[in-house]
Length: 247
Image (cartoon, rainbow, N blue to C red; front, side, top):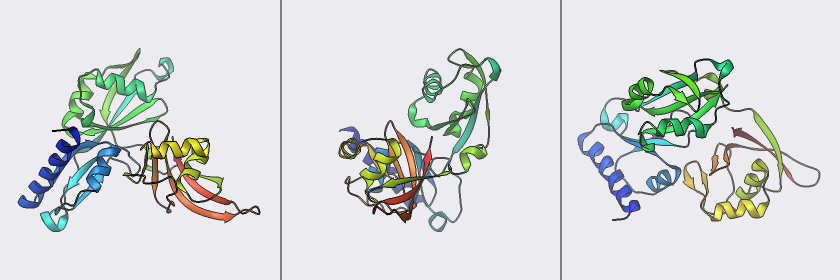
């Protein structure tokens, strides 16, 4: 059985367990491609996706609802702050540095969600079952000594990025992707056709898809942005649109 079939069977099993028992059931963290596959399934059990932040890419599937289960249960996702002990002497740390240090502990990627950076500190969203292990065992990132502790997400992550205005030819997906990431339209089109672009967790169907305000566009290896809509039309007939770019 291939990985896609195994994944579908696993999600169906979790959904059935929640529906039959009337209790909440949670998956591990899902990639964008897995979220897209899940959203395409026809399941009797309601579910939502949660990653710690509204714009998180990696998310857990939460099977259940207050109506079905007769209670509310928070997803088993917590935030771990990973901070240099002496910031003055710390290396400039990247997302790759934090992820590499975490993977070196023997953790599976599926138990970890997004890693966000603020002022050379990492904020990891992970399953609560591994948070204690991380806090006890992660002591260095690259050559920098770090300390880990449970922490609420900082305001810089909870607040949406500032609005950026861009001029585009239309609200087409390829036009917006090209403008945000400074690519040619052909490059943007190739990313969509190469299944590298997702709109609010679903695989983008076509470069010509029209964006709707509120949608979050994720482009593998480039980043993501929230589309805010048209502000006005320029004298040359182009559109000035607003986006929020997640760094």
